Picture 1 (spheres, rainbow, N blue to C red):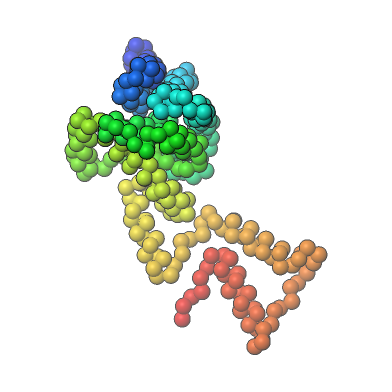
Picture 2 (tube, rainbow, N blue to C red; picture 1 turned 90 degrees about the horizontal axis):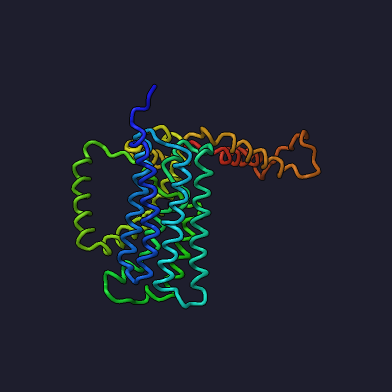
Length: 332
């Protein structure tokens, strides 16, 4: 069966990836000429091309192995090497540890991309794992690293945020977020409801207007909002891991599941054990081994514990077992 698109059209995703690579390298050339504003524009253009090439490959059914490798190499140059060199030329040149900071940022970007490539074919632990990245993705990290430069270009003068110490520490923080295990949201799985399309288009128009009139202020606000959302994203990931009943529910309907879970907690109920039964059984078995002791045979019957009023020890043991199994005593 012939491919649905001509070969020239199917090469379009790789062409966009090459444009991203060229934009990232151009950022270094602009920084060498002290045009740091154009350097930021070049890195932003590379991020835009990186967001488009994968979607174009899926739309045109043109995903290839060489395209995946080219995309990783372009990301390393555009979002690892280029931002590190731009920050070094802007604020870290001449400092004793300035070059060390640039090297650490580039190495962390390489490690982040290598981990991403290995996790593509790995089996997900949870069904919802595809909705999240592990660590801050490469384009977002490159844009977040430039926040001190955004503020300086917007205000026209530098402050404490533009000192070599502040810039170096901020670059190391972003590098740490790249290689961390912090879950971050993946925009690839976001689905916009039909009723939200019109308001979203209005917001896109407002964002475009702000980006055209005050580009550096817009970049600073967007990247700061992204970093501020990381705690909520981590909370959402942990909540989904604890609630298997929400795994097969569409994203826009999970709020109802969260409300039902809160209502159940208010009336004294707990979520069903489901996938945690095996873990609870193992915990109970370990508790039995600890109570028997290392020298007592496992098959020896345990003498009944009696309290001051006879049988109180058995009642206490029953309550402890129910607690280990995640059960709660019924109220009378």
